Image (tube, rainbow, N blue to C red; front, side):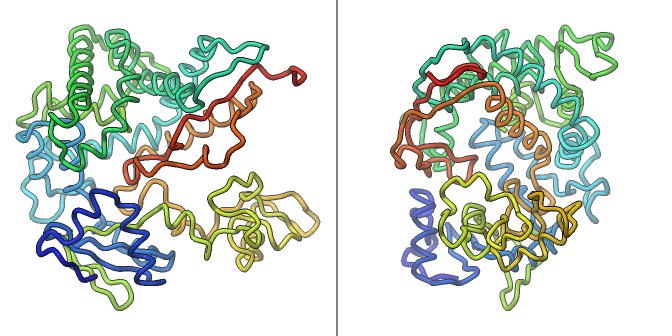
Amino acid sequence: MLPYALPFFGYAFSLFLDPVKLLARTRQSIGPRTGYGIKVIGYNVYFIYRPANVAKLRKYPKVITTPGVITFVLKTLFGMVPTAVDMHTFDKSGIQANARPGSSVKSHNRIDHLTHANFHKHLLGEGLAKVYQGFAVSLLRRLPSLGIDNQWTQHSDLLDFWMLPMTSAMNEALAGPIIECVNPGFAKDLFQYYPYLHSFLKGWLKWLIPEAYRLQKSLIQGVATWHAIARARFHASDIDKTTGYDPCWGSAFMRERQQILRHVDNWDAHSIAASDFGIFWGDKEDIRINEWRIPKGSLVVVPAGDAHKDPQVWNTRNSQYPLDRFWAERILAYPGDPQSGLRKPSHLDSDMNKASGHTPQDDTPKFVMSGLADSYMPFGIGERTCPGRGFARREIILFCAYPVDRYDIELLSSHDQDYETTTAFYGIGTQRPKGKVPFRIRQRGNEPG
C-alpha cells in the first residue's frame, strides 16, 4: 500500500481528476513493480500488472465480482432511483444458477443471475447469430443513406460519420424499430451523452453539467416511451419463428429481459427504463498473489491499457513498430521469420507449433493468439467478463471489414498528433482520437483521381 498525505481521502482527488496521469506517475515513481495499492476514501484499491499475476488472479473467478460497481453505475450514469438500486445491492445470491449458500433472495429478485443468463444466452450463446444477423441487415440497409457514390466526397470526422448508422443498427437489432421511430434523435443523443460519463462518475452536480442531465432524462424517457408502446401493442403471434424477432420488442433477448425485470420487487416503469438505458451503451475471500494478500472487499483493477501496450509481451519488431502505432502485419506469424507474430520473438517457436494447420512445408502466415489470454483482456476477467463480447466482436469485424471492402477511404491529415487518442474516456469504454479525423470516401472500383 502506497503512503498518502490526506487521511481518509488518500488518492481520491488525483484518481478522479486524472486517473491516467496518476497511474503513469505512480508506475514511474515505484519502478517495475507488478502491483501496488492505494487508499481512496477509506477503500483499498489494488492495481495488478504483468501476465503471470493476472493468471493468478483468474484462479478466483467467483471472487472477482463487481456488484458494488454495478449499483454505482446504475445510480450515477443511468439515473436509477435508490429503491430500485437497492434490489441490486440486496442481491447477494451471485450470478450462477445455484444461489450462494445462505442467500435468502427470492428467485424472481435474483437480478444478477437472471439478467446475466439472459445476456449469455442471446449475446454469447445460441441467440448470438440471430442478434448479429439483425445488426448486419440493419447496418447494410442504412449505408445507402450516407450518400456514398463513385465520386470522392469529403467529411469532417471519420468517427462521427460511421457511429450514428452503426449505433442505430445496434439499437434496432436489440430493440426493434419503434425506439427510434418515436425518438428520432435517440442515437445522436446517446453519442452526445457519452463524453459526460466521467463527469457523472466524479459526482458533478446538475448546475455544473445541465446538458448532461437533460440528455440523461431525455434518453430514459425515450426508453420508457418505447416500453409503453411495446407493452400495449405486442402480440406473441408477431414473433418471427425463424429469427425470434418481433416489431415491438425487437430481439428475443430484449423481450425475455422485460419478463425478468417486470417481476422484480420495487421496480416500476422508470426503473426498467433506466436499466435498459444501460443496455444501449453498452468479495467473498482474500486473494493471494505471490507474497501479497489482498483483503476481501477490496477493489482490484487490472489496467488493460497497460497490459495491451506491454513491451515485455507484445512484438515491436525490435522497436521498429511501437505499440502505439498501427502495424497491419503485427497479428501474423510467418514461418521462418523469428521477428513476426503478436508476441515477442522469444515466444514465436511455441506459437508457430500451435498454429492450426502448420506443417514444415507450409509458409502461409498464421494468426496466433496462444499464450496471450493474460495480456489481452478487452472484455475484462472473472465471472463478470462482458457477456456481450461475442456480439461486440462480430460488430467490430463487420464494421471494419465491410467499409474497407466496398469503399476507398483516405485520411486527409498527415500529422501524427491528429491520431493521438484522448484519455477522456479512460476506464469507461473504447478510446477515440483527441480531435476530428477528416477523410474522403467513394465507392470502390475506380481509378484514383
